[in-house]
Length: 151
Image (cartoon, rainbow, N blue to C red; front, side, top):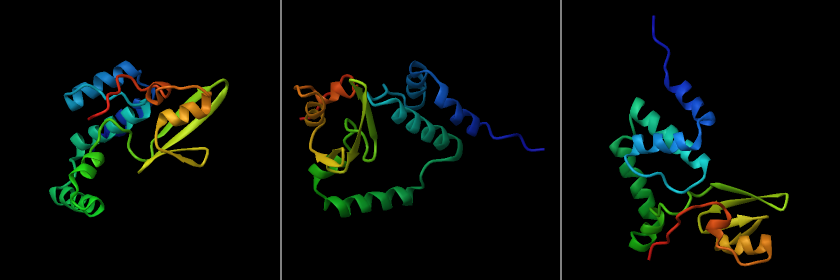
């Protein structure tokens, strides 16, 4: 009789794991400090890493194919490639949720910036200013800690 696969249960448990425990798992799985992104980001990356270790990662030819596709997008431009590999910015499609004065605001990370209330923005600070009417560091407003921009 086959033993049940423990991985689905381990993945399901991530939803109820405390944030400090998620960060500990990150350190154990990635051998690095967790990034200052939201909880959902940590959960999704930890879930992927658990499956990667259990079932294997991407095949080398898949990695090469993805790199080729990325190069098609950025034309081999090293500056654009750096943007593609920028770990300080949440990945495209990430939704940032912030409640302000009883109203929930949802911002979506896009390929070239952010979107809030169906309008494009270049920075989180501009969105924070639109929401609050005052100047804010957008990263701080949306709960990112220790954000350092690369130069």
